[in-house]
Image 1 (tube, rainbow, N blue to C red):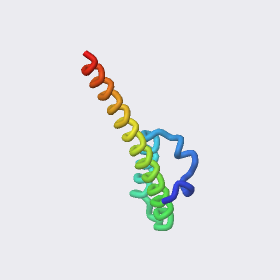
Image 2 (tube, rainbow, N blue to C red):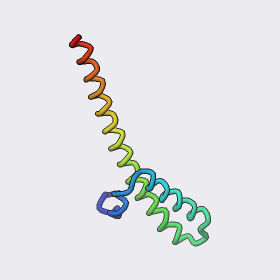
Image 3 (cartoon, one colour):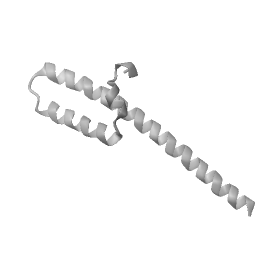
Length: 81
């Protein structure tokens, strides 16, 4: 799904908040009897999943870069001695 289809307010939420919202949608889907409402909720869940994946990837990449910097810093200190 394209980012332009995603609600703007979801982009400012944390991963934990997005996960809670996704869990709420899943709970409502499990108890839903009307198929049309289920389709709408499922589409919303897919959009949330996309946002969560992108935020997770971005956070993972940031952690990876910070770790590499710290390793390089430690190695340069060892080499300086």
